[in-house]
Length: 260
Image 1: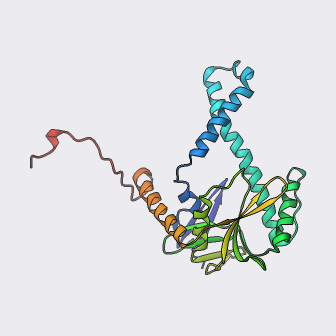
Image 2: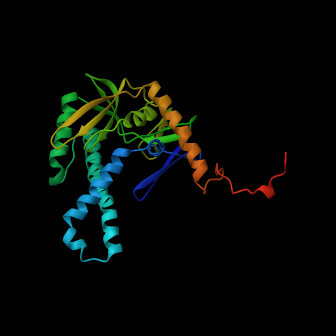
């Protein structure tokens, strides 16, 4: 019987190890502050207001405010959907050597095909779930591949405008997991495949850049420290947890306190 289970629902998913829910690596990393995203959200909302000024002036104030506020989420959702589609087609190319992209994604998928040929990448594991049974987290990696030029590598596809440093924490969490579950009916579990190095494949308009990532043991230690912060924050703020422990108590008054 498999120890790791991934449950998909809507646009999300969750993991359990031995029947107990555990956090995903990207959820843990999500606790990091991201000031660049705050700036991006402000620019998107401001840009929407400027581009739709005449339409907005015809609407009630609260409706106007909501459209401006939600503009960033609409933009982000489109980017995520596009990224996920490119992701899936890239993984299909790596696993089966062929894919049938729609016209609007053709240039990116052709770029991925050239990238795979350029580095002579042979897929070993694709969209595989991983977990650390001692530290109690899980995740889903993109690709483990073998290349005569690079050795055995852990590869993550990124489709955004830039690649953020937090990807090192993500890849370190996957690299040093102790359990790998490959697709199948039923899925097959075994130890994590050792890799020589970690990389990001950054998919641009008509090219793919290969970016080395320093996802070493020191980075993994940093991920584990972040996981401690994640657990503390969840226990301090998530009322649904059985071990919910708010660090700030109810107000007290002098008449409630006995003199020492």
